[in-house]
Image 1 (tube, helix red, strand yellow):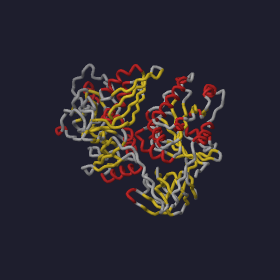
Image 2: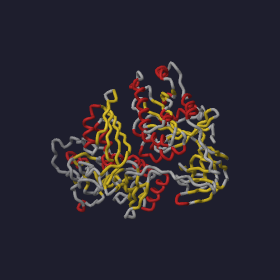
Image 3: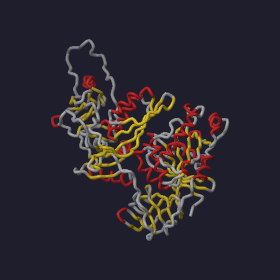
Image 4: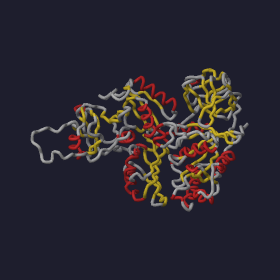
Length: 618
C-alpha cells in the first residue's frame, strides 16, 4: 500500500556545496513563507555553531506543500564526523537528491552519505549546483563532473535502475534549475527566467511514495528527538504502519526488552519549518509525538501487540577523548566549575541524542571517556558545552585499536586533497611522513590537482591546520574511514615541545619579548597565567619552563634607547580545533566560557620532566 500524495526525501551534499541554500529556495518557491515574512538565509541552520561554521551539524526536518502533494525534506550533515545523524535519518526517507558542486565534483563526504543511501535502495536525483562558477564556463567541466558522478554510482555498486538517474543543472543561490544543458548560459545571463519547478517535478516523478508496512497496527521508529517547554520531550520519526491519534495509548519499546505504556498527549506534523498540532497522522508521514519523558533514538513506538523494529545501527567510533572536572588553579573564575556528577549527566544526555557517540566510565571518578567519529565532532560538542557556561578539561584524542587474530589493528582512512599543483610535492612528503600511501594523483584543471592517500587515522590527527598552512589556505582536506589496517608503528605527533609557565601571575611584555627567540607565543601581555600552563610552542623537541611574569628592574640610570617601545613579532591564536590538534598525551585543554587554555596534567615544575617521550599511546 502506498501514500501517493506524499514524498520523503533527504539532500546529500558535501560541506559548502549549497545544500542548505537549495532548501531555502525550495521552501520559498513552494510558498511556505508569507510575503510579509522576514526570512533569514540558511533557515535550516538553526544552531549558532551551524551559522558560524557554515555547515550542517544536526539533521532537521521541513515539509513543503506542492500542489496536492506533500514533500518531507530532511537536511542531513555533509561531514562524516556527523555520520550518526546521516545513518538514522536515511531510514526516514525513500529517495535522495545528490547535490554536487559543478567545479569540485563529488567529494568524500558525498561518497560516504551516497553509499548509505544506495545501500537502502533509494532512487537518486543528481543536481549539479553552482553552474555559474567561472571554472564552468563553456560547460566542459560540468560534463566532467557528471561523468565523475556516474563513475561514483558504479563504484558504490548502484543497481542498473539507480545508475539511470535524472540530471538537473542548478544555481541554488539564484533559485533556478534546468534539465536542459543548453539552457544554462541563457539562465546565467538572465535571458531566461528560471525556477525550481523541474526539481519539484523530478521528485514527484522519480522518488516513490512511502511504502506502508502491514504490521497489524501503529508502528514508528524514533529517529530524532526534540523538546518543548510546554509538553517536554518529543519523539520524531516516520510512521511505518497504521495511524495515530492524539490521546491514544501506545507503547515505547526500548532497548533490552523495555516496554512502557503511555498516552499520546500531543501530536504534531511539519508545515514548512514549524511543527503544527494535529489530531491524526497516517502511515508514511513524519510524526512528532509527546507523552513520555524517556524517549530514546532507536526506540519503537507501537501498539502493544506490534513487534518492535530492529534498532538503528551506526558505524563504530574510531576516536576517544577524556573529559575531566576542571582542576586548574583558575577553576570557577569564568563559568560553572561542574562536579563529576553534573559533567557525567551532561555527557550522557549528549550520547542519548547522538547515536554516533558512546560513553564510558574510567578508573577515576572525575574523568569520563567519550567515543566518537572525529576531531570536528568533538570540537562541536566541547563548544556547545562551553556556551552552556560549563568549565571542564579535555585530553588528547586517542585512536581506538582492535586485536584481530593476535594482530593489533588501527583504523585506516581515505584522504582526498584538492590543492594547487605547486604545493603537491611538499604536501605529499608531509603525509608520507605520517605513514600515508599515495593512491591516485589526478590533475583537475585550472592548475589544481586531486591527490588520494590511504593514511591511518593516527596520521591525520593535527594535520588539517598543517595542510592549510602548506597550501596557503587554498587546499580542500576531506577524509573517510575505509577499514582497518595493521598497526603502522610509532608516529611522533608533534616535533616541537611546549613553553610552560613556572609561576603564577600576569604575563608581561618584557618577559615575552625575551622569550621570542625560543619559539611562538600563544598568549598576549596581560594574560593571567599559572604554574604548568602552556604559553607557547618551543622550537626544540623538549619542553621549556619559563617565567612569563618577569618584570624589568627599575634603575636610576636612563639608557639612550629606553623609551623605544618594543612589540612582539607575532602571536599564534589557538582556536579550540588548533588546541585539539596540537595537544600531547601529558596535556589538558582547559575549556571555560571565556577562555581556552592548555596546561600540563602535572602542574608542579619540579614534578615533571622536560624530556618528551617519542611515539604515541597504543
